[in-house]
Image 1 (cartoon, one colour):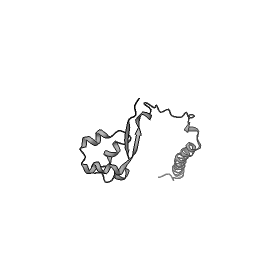
Image 2 (cartoon, one colour):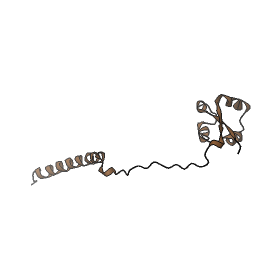
Image 3 (cartoon, helix red, strand yellow):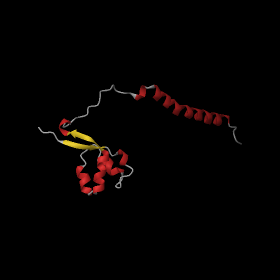
Image 4 (cartoon, one colour):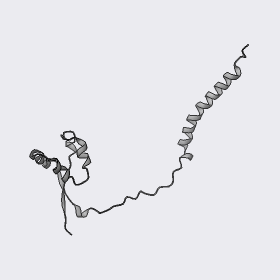
Length: 114
């Protein structure tokens, strides 16, 4: 086993000023962006600016190969029995009931036309 150190840069402060746009920098977040950087053909000025954003080195041998995310187990959530669901249902039904009563009162109290 041998350790490979990779350099880490925090370019957050440069996002707005990057000539290629912030999307280019954001797409390289959390990965080895060496090839991306080299393929563009950055100037010597751009290379000199990197020192300003240098954070440190990371030993890639300490990074686990594959970490599978397992979400925590949670009890089943039945939204149909929650008080919030009942309130939302009433907020929908009460105006409809009032409208139906109003139409019914109007219909039954309307004087017959001749």
